[in-house]
Image 1 (cartoon, one colour):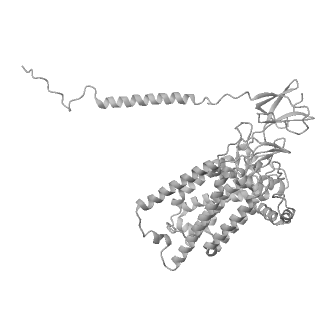
Image 2: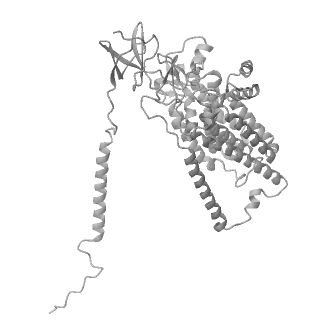
Image 3: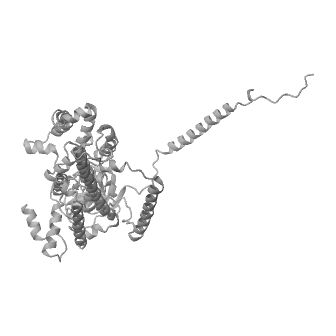
Length: 161
Length: 380
């Protein structure tokens, strides 16, 4: 009897899929997706994004004519090599203050950034550098030297062939 | 003095074909720009400017000053060493900075002197009188802004075409240019790095500068000088600004640009940038001065004992001086500011004063660090 067409749903009736829920869920899922992407991105951070550099160990032949106490500077390396009657040693050219590459001078090294001066054995003479220059490990292989820029040795360690 | 006279007479610097007068002027300039002399003479100059401010604020005085400066500049421009520094493309703006800082400092001084006289006569200040007049934003203000914009754009365009940006040697990890200079606005920080450890000069002091500048409105609640120039009402604040900004920060920029050469050594403006200039001095820590020079025995091995003199000196400086000064010299300031404000101000102020103290000690007695504990990466 009561076949009258159903009246259109009122705006006050509850919705089949509540809009509030829809908005809430999409916000939730987008947050989750964002966090997931961010987490993936952050997981990659510990790997340094640098171009792999050549080995920090290098082979070098010190010229026979190098006089006592004069630095020999292999090109492209921040290391100075010395030789005297007691043997060969390698002094790092990285300033202990802020890491500029120091310049070899007549007597020792000078930093072009903040004016620290070191003797040729790396001891600080002047300027803000708090610590002496690092000595690197040198080993002989035949008449060639192998310098390891990652290994430090106590200052004064001289190596004979 | 003997040494100075000797350099003056020997004609150590300058071009080869200089006459005796030109060589004398150049040698005097080189002699005067040695850092200690430069600092002392600039402090004296600032003191003189403030003491004789009535004289220095006259228009003809600054006109004569700028005429003389221009004459000297033209004279100096002929010198090959001076010319080489001055015409470097990135140094051109520093010359402009130099001239504008002097001009605007002078302008503020002039207005301050005029205002002080007017206040004494009971008249309103120049700015107070001006603020009574009103103009329209459009067109009065916007037109001026538009003209400035067009002129400056044109000037920058011409400048960038005439003086091309400098390109240095290709970057290489194993090579640092000599001298290695920061951009001009960072030269102050670079200069601080010469005297302090990186964590102080690069982290602590810049933070203090920024925090301190932000704190000024909270620390300085004195309403005098707001919106008008004055000297008599705020002598301490004005002198502090001149010393801190004009003498320090601008000087650091000028020092770093023109006087720092290869190996970060000092060079006079007319001195040849000799790569092998030898400064035969050795920097010594305060602990060495105390134990070795004063007591005549070797430095103790224990770092805290070894550095005790420096630690005590600095603790005394930062903990004893503020209450001491507050009870004696700056009694009035404590009463006006209250204890908290005064102490915050005093500590910022003491950090500021520590910088020239350290620089002066480095230049005169070759002091390296008050506290030098590389064991703990703690050097002050």
